[in-house]
Image (cartoon, rainbow, N blue to C red; front, side):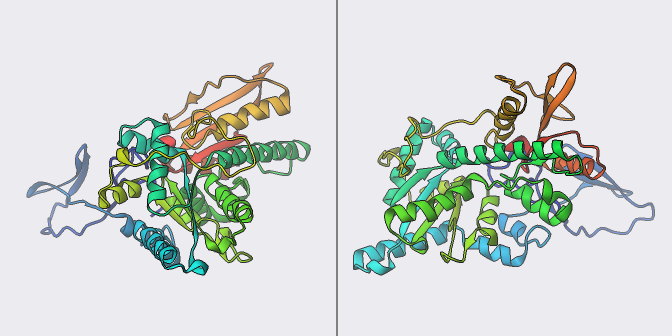
Length: 403
């Protein structure tokens, strides 16, 4: 499958890859041989085959997540095994074992369990359970602590660090290319979407990789924060911390399983388990727990910086965290001493491909784009290969609409 995840649509919960095409596998249809051949037509409700015997709708089989992850066109079988270790069943098993160790006094086997909740998952679950976002964050904290979490964090500090690092990297690249025109490292392509990164690595390889930002995603920055800084603050080794992230996308499981994010020194992964918003909903249903009736507990803030007044926040307006908006405004100020307050994106071929420019005296100084979905990604890559891309930065997300 060339399309890594943009075609998956598992439920109607609007936190995960919707709207989208359905992902289907071809099904063998046994029909009688026709002398005149057959004609395939596409209608609003599916594919139809017309022969001399008449017209019939072709059968379609929807695939499951397990089917998709088993496809070697996207990931290897080894990666598939790693992903299966990140399930709600595995999480509950670890939590139950940890609680048993606590009750039996096996102190040397007890792990410190840390949950990290991202804002996108909190927003979708708040909508699902018709809760205020801040209240949902507190209710989820109460639920996580009820099932065995020692700390429940949000991704605020990691989101900020990701934006700061990405904007600094862009300015450095821009200045470097300005000084040496032979140093082609623009456009800089966002690296926050693991589906896009996996596709880029396995489909375009060495050509596209130099353009992708080296900044880690917020999830993996949180992994370092928890396993390095929090562990030292608590006086606990990294291998004794079990770090769970709650994310909106199944591709985050693949990201957490990468060898890049395993520390041989600490003998532990930055993120041990990724659970999606959908799986949290399934866990609540399975345990017959009403989220609206769980105890509301404030989230933890173990960092040596001022705690934000709210748990959930917004970085600009895009679904991926506002990278394009933030970097554009920072670069305008840092490179050209221009203060940009509001950005007016222009839709190109479709609403999922938008661009914004910074101009002065009729000259374009910056040209940024937001490209969501694989159709737009493929067009972007083809322009790059033909040397016809005019962009300085592109925020890329595998999912249509960028969510």
